[in-house]
Image (cartoon, rainbow, N blue to C red):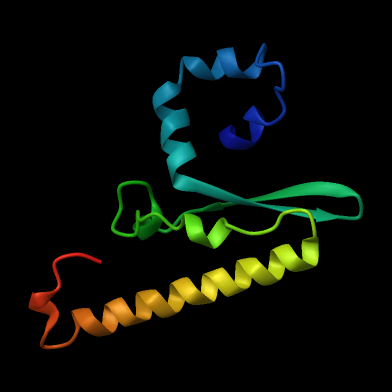
Length: 112
């Protein structure tokens, strides 16, 4: 709810100053929640969700995944296809890393 409230104060004049007194709580919820933006019927919708413990900043999965978002943003179909291709590439790379970690040669890997 706190993260959603910040989206309604575009001028940062009402809600943002009120939330400053609860800066620790705001920081906690910003780190613990994620959201997805969906555009349908000429309207932007945001779906908020709690992040799993492994996915919070500073957690074990806090790795750079910028390549997943390197897509063409103008054409929606092309954007979706490139996003899925990039995500599949990352999943296969993570699967390979997992297979290496569980092999008897895992001690030889010192960098990814």
